Length: 174
Image (cartoon, rainbow, N blue to C red; front, side):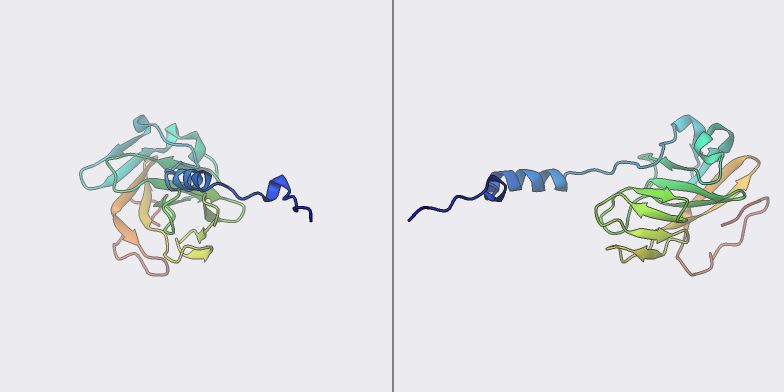
């Protein structure tokens, strides 16, 4: 009786290799999917307001553009998208499923997670599809004199009206 030969592609993978692969996957860190803004083009105020100088951000100069703010002084990273000429949408750039970075897909008008599950979110933060069950945090924003003001203290839930009235002088409230 001859022993059957197992093709090389079917050989069992050693447990050490599996452990290394799983360890590497668990160590994956947040990696921004959109251009990261340099600290010189935005400012933070004491009241958790982020002020972005739009004239200094080419990625936001065109409809369909997007950019990310990664700053350890903020409670979470931000993803800013420009879906229309007079509208900016600002969300937490972390997927609510596993915390992976999001990208903006203008053609589909949604945000997409960078992980293998690819959760998708509407512009209002609600879940379109994927493993994510919770909506994104969407922040109130307004264009004031060429600057985008993002209110990190006011997070609006999808489908619910923002509880805060627009501030005086706001040209583009969410």
